[in-house]
Length: 117
Image (cartoon, rainbow, N blue to C red; front, side):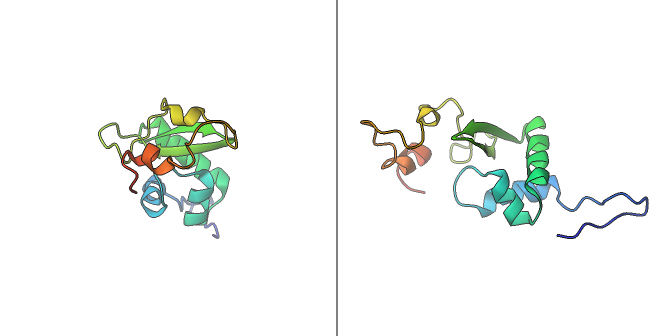
């Protein structure tokens, strides 16, 4: 994406917060990464992170670092499909951990409640 300068010589804003919120509608699943935003909006990951942080400061999205990545979701406690509970035990599982857990087989049930997307 080429950047354009305005009359004052400053770069003009090409990725809006609404654009970033729209990414949540275009990707599969209840969470996105800065990489999802960057790829969808053809911008840098740094721009994507900056916009996501602005949305978080405004209370529109929330985030959590998990498995070395930050995931973002729409912060809406009234919408169980879109809202993700950061305190859910699901987030405590270590990626690739072995054991008696069947979380990998039940991920849809865990995320969506009834096993359907």
